[in-house]
Length: 127
Image 1 (spheres, helix red, strand yellow):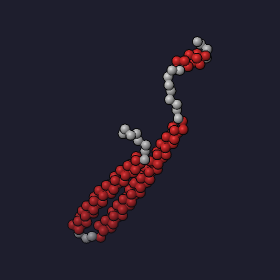
Image 2: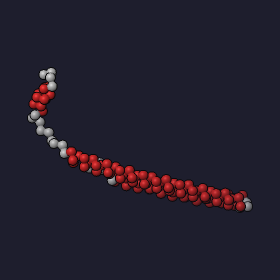
Image 3: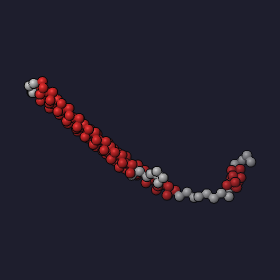
Image 4: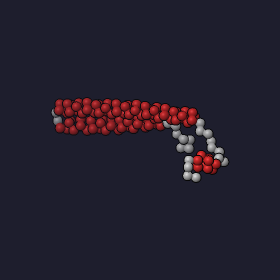
């Protein structure tokens, strides 16, 4: 048939024998609402974590600058070249230790942030 009745009668008859599950719209909306809430919470946790990371990095940079300034001040006040080299070597050792400790702290904070954000997401049970 060429007219619009084809879809009303023939296609209807074709699919009449197939059982179609009814769609529970309310359940689908509730499920998606929970997903959106979980993604929102994960995003908030991630933003808080990144803010903490940025704060710690600024603190590390500020401390490093203060220590470098102190080193230059001390370095100019010490008399002999040997004393200056010893002071510089001690500073380099201390700076390396603080750098390793700071890097470890940043990595742990980033991992914690990632874990907290991903824990609230609605992952499928097969993952």
